Image (cartoon, rainbow, N blue to C red; front, side, top):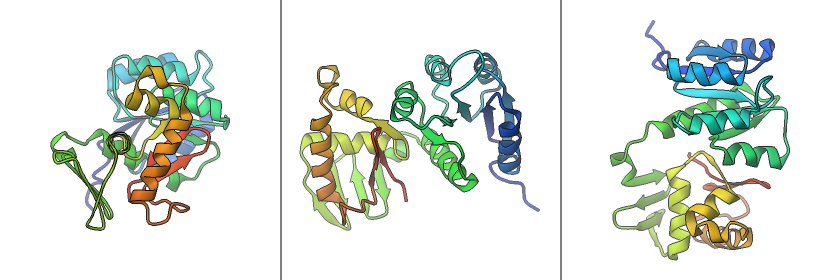
Length: 232
């Protein structure tokens, strides 16, 4: 039997509940090498020592909040972080994502959904600059050198703002970007409170690239949080 090609990838599971760590070990252990930590301090130390390829992080840790762990990790590493938590409020999700988390799953969650989020996060972290010159996602093709956007071979005319929004979403494809993150990257800090401006531009962008704006296949809304470019 051939070896699992992902078995050399290390995932650090950070959760103070032993049953959760046991469940994740059983669910992911046949695909990845699983490391464990029970608190934030151990998570930071294990990341520094073991260099995991991805961190699965609970927010409710005994020594510090998972959002603080994410902030401290982001000071020196770009390792993908997927937050898992029983907290399902928009405020908690936005805070974790603004701190630098790549994704957020609310407990309880399905193994297949978690595996899909892991694959997207790992795929994005392994992309190189040369691979990003041309982006293709189903019928959507973007040539970043020529600044051309095509959908099903149709050349799409975008405003500079619409193009910048799409480029940022593609650069972070599969990752949830909060309203705050998108506004800051597109317009800068002076527009951080103007979420209406973002919604208008995303709506216009959708009309140009989506076949059905009511059932978008590319730009997915995360209610109350932000947007995600879905990779197919």
